[in-house]
Image: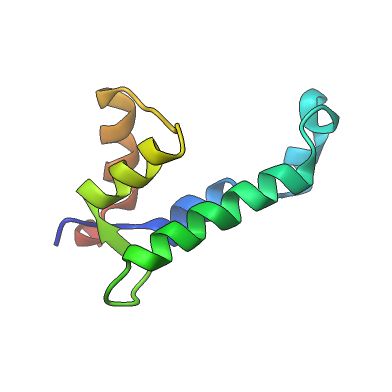
Length: 88
């Protein structure tokens, strides 16, 4: 259907005990990361017209670009292939 599951995407970037072990975890405050994830989530939800935790690929890319989450074509294709709800 050409939609991507943004909830799955956001879960990948959430706080975990493992992520807190990285050397730079103290240099990048957790609160800032959490706020950024919440901001992304709000943007996705605003565009999720069917309330099924997915948005069209074009909208997904626009939101990422809006928040300076730039990916090259190969990276974006890899991400899309993992999140595409039509592959399930």
